[in-house]
Length: 123
Image (tube, rainbow, N blue to C red; front, side, top):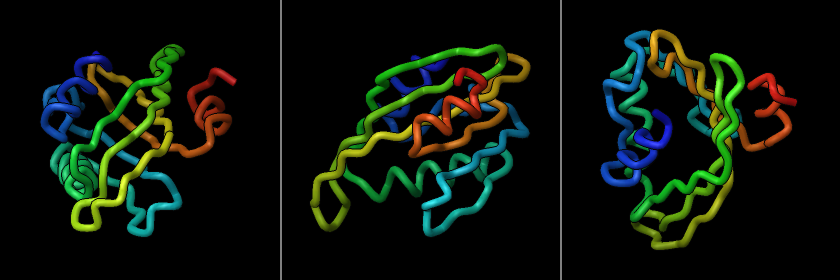
């Protein structure tokens, strides 16, 4: 499932809507100046679209995927260019996914891998 989510994200800037549980909750990194927990498919899709639209040619490369029970940590490298500025970006971050009923029920972003591993229950 995760592989398909990232394939579609890299093609369209959005994960597949049907991969998300209707009650999905998304927690951005705390450093996000517009930090706000998003709830529900529509809210999460708007957040991801807004984030993706801030960049040109945004690409997410999965560096590691580690599953643990109902959770999975995906550590990834994001590359692209700032829309408008044209400045290149490259950063790494993790997302801890929680699954329920075969769908993504939660996503929590991390910039610290040790914290992500702890949250995913693999540290």
